Length: 199
Image 1 (tube, rainbow, N blue to C red):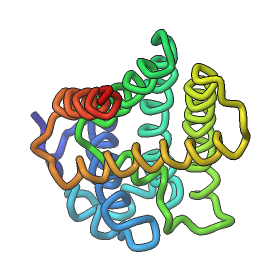
Image 2 (tube, one colour):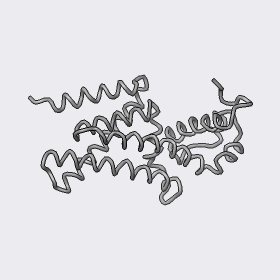
Image 3 (cartoon, helix red, strand yellow):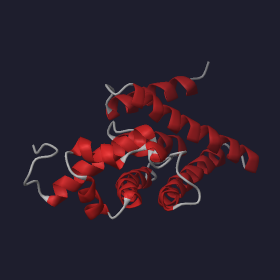
Image 4 (spheres, rainbow, N blue to C red):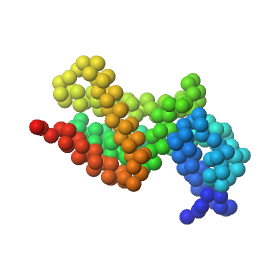
C-alpha cells in the first residue's frame, strides 16, 4: 500500500489520500478551524499541490463533502426499499453505518455547525443535508401514517427526535471506534427491540 508522501503515487491515489486526511481534519476540527497547512503536512505533500488538485480551500472541502454525501445519500435511498416503516428505519441506520464504515467525520462535515452562512461550503453541504433530511421526513411520515397519526406538530417533533437519535448514535460511535458497522446495526436492533417490547 502506498504511504502518504511517497513519490510516484498516481494522482487518483494521491487525491484519495488528501481527501481522507482532509475529511478527518474538517470533521474533527470543523471547517472554521481546519488548516490546509496541517492537512498537507499530514499527507506529506505541499500546500500548492493541494491547491493544484482542488483549486482552493473550499474546493478541497467540497470534494470531501461530495464524496461523503454521495455515499450517504445513496445508502439511505437504497434503504427506503425496505418493507414497513420500522424496518425502513433500521435499514436506514444500517445504510448510514455502512456508508460511514467507522469514519464518523464523514457525517460531521455535512452537518458542520461551523460552516459560514452564507458561503460556498455551507451551500454544498446543505444540498446533502436537504436530501438526507427529506428522506428522514418521508420515513417519519410513514411511521406516523402506520399509527394513524396525521398532526403536523407530531411529525415535526418525531422528525427532530429521529435526527437526534441518528446524530447522537453517530457521535457515540465516534467515541467508540472499536465498534464495527455491523456492531452498530446489531446494537440498534437490540435497543429498538427492547424499546418496542410490550410490558
